[in-house]
Image 1 (cartoon, one colour):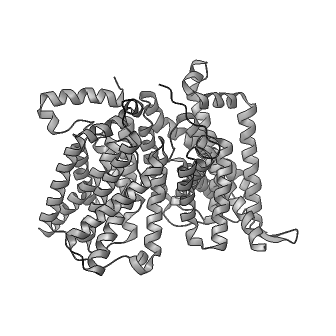
Image 2 (cartoon, chains in turn brown, blue):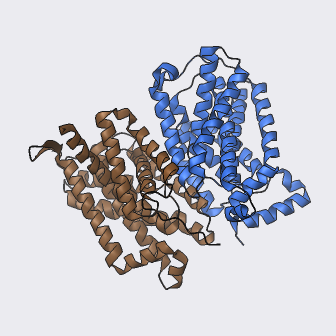
Image 3 (tube, rainbow over the protein chains, first blue to last red):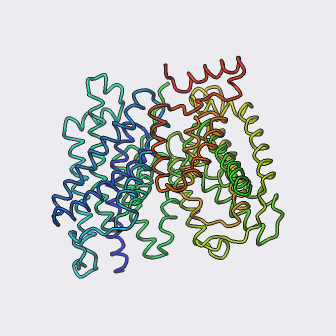
Length: 293
Length: 293
């Protein structure tokens, strides 16, 4: 019983970190209709900025976290300007964007391999990881609770931004139809930059928590594949879907690790993907794509 | 002579695998990130059959090809039924799952340390013979009714389905054939190296295959062959700076997409340059592919 409660909290915590990554991915997908494989790179950039800021500017997580979010957001915008903008202005073939995003993810990963080296780095201990007793029921790590709370705060802020702000309205319009939104006077180029900035920032938050959980290394971005799977399970392009899919994935992973075998947890993730595609390919909350001829 | 013939054998193997990816990505328009998985299946099938069961090498190589083909078909049915990036995401899952299975199924695959003692059955004449036969078969396939259907799925799947083509069926067929080519290439690689390891067939190998096809030109078989010669030779020449290899692959992908998305050859073929009618035809085809002025 205690293990179950513990694994449920761990699963929710891991799932909420996946959710931060998955919503960014889903946000970009909803506007440009392609899977941004460079998304994992933003996470790694955020992690490394946080690491070096903590090492050189003193152990202040607020400054380091702020710099990390800003840096990852700006590099996401830069990636879009360098690699995607020239392509999407010339053609509407999403295959080209997909290939360019794969290229960017390899470039970002290998820049860190060359510059920072491939070894595993532990973040300085600024985020508490002491055990916490929850109402005498179960014991869990303070880090798990903290990452859950922070993820919920950021997701709530994103929801407010999308629903209440003017740019949020523009994003919703563009997700419905990018071209018409452009004709209605929305600055599409600016809008896409904002979307990439937000996605990069959320990925950096996820990156900081993941590098505390698993240590930091250049290939850490590969973990975004689980966020992609979560976004597909929840429904591609749907933000609430991405959150629900991430929670399902985090729980499934942690329950498998706790009760069956930790080697099987990755296989469980991919069988979840295959089951989703077989049973309900649009995901839990995905819309059926309308064909315009 | 030994080194030179080794390079030529490697060239043939890489070219066979690249033709497989070219059929799927270049001619059918389905993006893949996991074709190394099919090479791994072919390699391990050939290795285990020849070493443990004393099967003749030719039968073992064919068995490797067919095993990959069956797995590709089964993966293709749920993921290629839908348009979008589902197969690209599932292919990453596939390559990871196959690696996990190879590493953990100790009793059959001998785990992560690799599978030694395979008979060196891949000789120079045999590799060349396989290459020539498979290249001729591929040219015939591309110019057949099936090849035209594949291209129709790539250029405008909606129009193709309105003309009565079952586009999902053709995409799955294309994937199965491409899995067969990669399986054969993997089996030949096992016979050439005499030692195989799960880590030989990771994401890096998959990325290399995709880069070759993109660099050579999506929709050009001779471009793919040219690119695989260039990339194999460049890899050999620049062995001393191999830590930059992945960075260069990534850069090549992005630069190709941004500057010249049609690759070296576009959708033209080398043999098409000598024939007036066919070069005219390929020009109109190109207009259809990029939609560029």
